[in-house]
Image 1: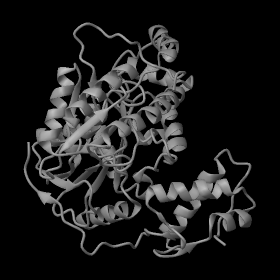
Image 2: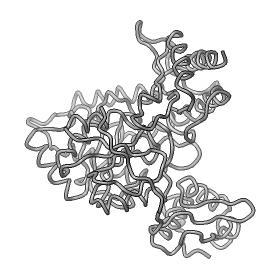
Image 3: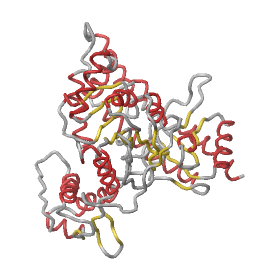
Length: 455
């Protein structure tokens, strides 16, 4: 029997409690790689819970890469704190420049091209009254007379600390959070406080992150996005998207997270976790934040761009103490900070429960649209990662990808090529977003894509 205890009086669901305690047993070394866990039926009987509880917990830990189910054999531990990867590649140094479902309005302003991109989220029109109410509250609130607290509004940081604890498993004090004007603003705040040296960025990866690093006069080192990294070389930081790799969609397995953290310790580097859309999992609960594993080594970046809208221009930064204070000191001197009206509006959206409703609504839409994209594309291309979030990435030859992209463009849609996210990886294909279009537009775009690929 596993040494776990479930608290039925807790507000935390029983499957989440069980998954968290098993995860802790693995991290502490109580459970080691190769250890066989009790069957879900046996563990449910031991704990006096339904089998659904243990099955959900095992499914969650399997999705995160801590466990592996072997047909006819059982469930085994696959990653521990002491997991090593002898043949782990080094990073490559290269300087580089349903009918009832809610839908968006069927028309859009003249001259606006529908974009099937990775950054435009679904906005449920049924939530518009709450959105307008938030801005009415901004209009009657009293703004600060001078420059605002560079950390951001205290009430907003308190609300964010509560939300990050509930949704991402991060136990934070509000003073540990710095409200930013988005992810790249958080990165811009961090880079000057790192010691001299290059920054590793996933390849393929977030283009704005790589460009921001270059803008600050640092070399970009390409970090293989689909391989275990056991050596960071002379990099002073590694920028990763572990919950949903951008743009391939892969979840960084637990063993790879531990290997990256160990590599960062050896290099005395920090890991920059961009947690941009972890709310949007359809199969299991969101994968816990990597920062939970080592708060002293991981810089955590979050954003409201995918859960609200990008133009709100709000995010948050949680840095280790030795970086938090220098960042805050510089922001104080430069009067850097997120816009007060946006912060005040987000506070209302959080307090009213609007953000939770928006996430649930969007997740339902994405869960319905993602399989439609997969059904259309799977005869012609290979899915790069599990279905999650507001886009999916499809691997196919560059000539075919360009042909499909051009057909979509001729039909009035813009779709990104995977090659534009890559530097040295050489991966090619299409990155198909489905949050910023209507259902009818998505169907027309898919028809154009598959028509070109079929020809």
